[in-house]
Image: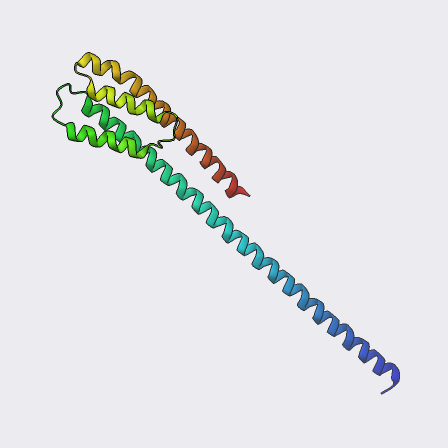
Length: 159
């Protein structure tokens, strides 16, 4: 074998080895990138699932609060109620579902107390309107918070 053939064989061997090394590096880079993308996708999915779960909990909480408000109002309509325990229970549920740091909490509690203590049907009806308006405001505000959370989830899911 001549020197030229040996040199050619060495050059081909070096080029082949370099090709294998570059190919291995590119494959490793691609695998690393794919693993990072997969991990990012998993992290994003966990974040989305968490946000969806919080939104579900908020919706359940809003439903529970609305149901307690309706129950309290319905039981309290009777002037001489034989359902005092149930009225108290519905009021307590509202108290427990509400955030006591909410600026409307104290007013809501006062309205419920006035409603319970009303002696006549007229007094009950006079107490009912502000109670219902405040309940509507609270539920509307919380619904708006939920809608905002759902919009954020939608935006996150499209990223």
